[in-house]
Length: 351
Ligand code: GLN
Image (cartoon, rainbow, N blue to C red):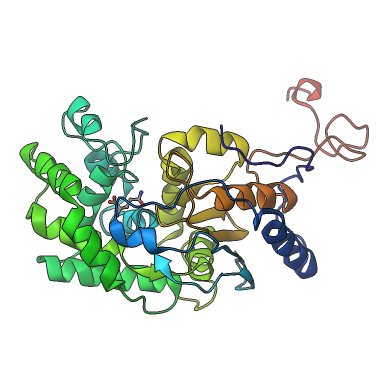
């Protein structure tokens, strides 16, 4: 299980709205204060440039669907987006082809295996199973609009920038470092091709995917990108419609099932929100209709998820009342009371 360190914190019911502005400010600050000195986890180093990250970096931003933003700590420190890009590329390809086609081509189910698993592909006849692991993400990038790799890259760059509401830059150091060490992703792309599931040059597609993972974002950007999905596909800061409401819904469903790698079930069980994490230390968690939480802190747990990010998100999910499964407790006007307005099914008279 995730070590969320939230024992004793009351779960607020998931109501239709976030608490008032001041309360959100207070809770975002409290989450930062509470976990700032946590020193569990290890900074990723399998992409050499990622090992240069400062383990003390810790930023949180909550964005609401009205465009309100609450930044605390290192919310403006840029880092490469890594796997979090998969969520937004998935939304963009669904927008292009519709969810049924992408469901067939890429799948929506958890593989139960690590994000860079080759065995998962072999066990499923080359079907990636889900777009949040590398195989499904590389297959999704290959489906982006454009006939050439350069056009596909432009579509990825433009689409992710629209989610963020500003033009994102590439971290050239991270891009070069990952390009020199990504033989496993090259192998995954070749394997997809061998199964007839990659309709493009594997080397070129992995290059676009590597660039996509090297796009620089901040915790603030992640919150805005997530709030765009929470807002039915409209960026709440710029007002730009990036994807449709249906695509946002489908993307959130896929994130709920697959966003935290093979620990997605545990995450949903404990935190109750669709989310996506990445190895550079970012996590975005989305509360449909309300907003999103972007966190950034490089030290990761064994599954590759940011430790401070998990804990801060768990804390905010409880205190802001975001857990999708938390119904209000029975109260004076709640279930079981005599003042209920709806009639229980067994008391309804048949016409
Ligand atoms: N670019 C990274 C990779 O393909 C992304 C992995 C991640 O964030 N989990 O290995």
